[in-house]
Image (cartoon, rainbow, N blue to C red):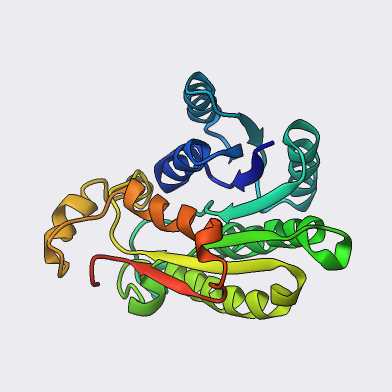
Length: 248
């Protein structure tokens, strides 16, 4: 039986690339989405047509009741969870701190930080040997912005990803002896739809050539790092924050 993986925000971008690659590597994949139902269903169909196993799971990860229901549905439809990719995240339009609202910050931290912590908590409850589980792996998606700060653009997003870095290190040490590995991937400038939601749809094309590697990255390049961290090939890797950023 395939191991069960949950990918939050899995309908597009890095999440979709991760879900597809993981399915090819033998994972049964739960694809979480908040509003993009059609994209998630199309992805499920692609995986099933290729002989894999996948289900779409709607939930706003910032809402605890929806997260709890999602984990129950995942277990009922696919079986015990063995892997979690905390990929869901939001960004807002580029702005300075003195132009940002409290509502913007609350939405961003509710999804990017609290949502990831809620999902990790529920995964630990099911995977940890302390709770009768057989272990597993968690990969949190951070951002190179946690190192760079994103001044004048997205310092709130950068701060939320800095929290993910710290959370990854602490949780890795907390559950290492319980059979769970926890790592993070820090993508740099990746050509995905997230830039459009930040009001800069051409950002990857425009800024990519300024990186040391002279181009933007692709979603599959990030997915390959994520799926490796989930795999037995990374069995001695926990508490790592892996930069996939073209040298930025």
